Length: 197
Image 1 (cartoon, helix red, strand yellow):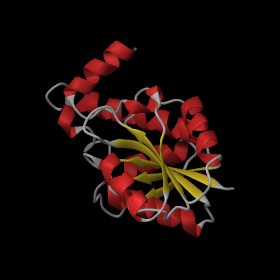
Image 2 (cartoon, helix red, strand yellow):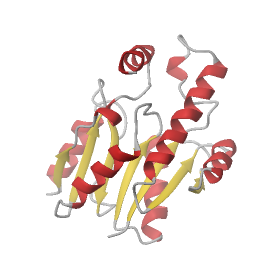
Image 3 (cartoon, rainbow, N blue to C red):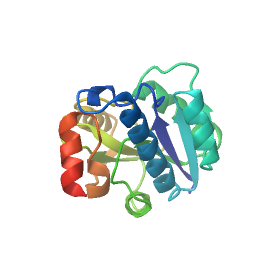
Image 4 (spheres, rainbow, N blue to C red):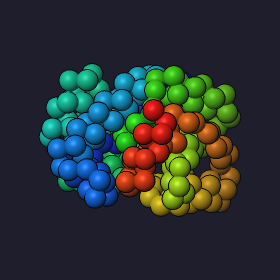
């Protein structure tokens, strides 16, 4: 089975806007870049790494980090980026795809490996979701086959993914991961990060 890990990375200048009250532009850019590198490194637990890049700079650094890159013609949000990544992975022969957020400051290679091992033992069609802390979001989504359900990233996405899977008769599994639960969206998330480290 060929599993692609698709990492969704916004343009560094537009990333982490909601952290503006706590961090200046330079700090937000540096944080976005650091988290992107962590995500790409962790993604190597899969068979193939594809970065959907929201800008030229992201495209260049992701390629330097060893990932295949798909540069978006224009940023149109996480669901559109994920759709583009899924399309490229399927065209290249992926049997399963893990969609991975790039703003997970605690993510590790081992955490992604453990998720993929667990997901690989499930019978398809299957969806495995990693919940985010707060807001009902989803930080990682494993799909086998890659078109098992639709895309619903954003607030309360976990419930939407579950409802879609149930409506289509697709097995839906929750995978709890401390390394992938924290995403950096708001200033309170920075406080959680400082406590975690």
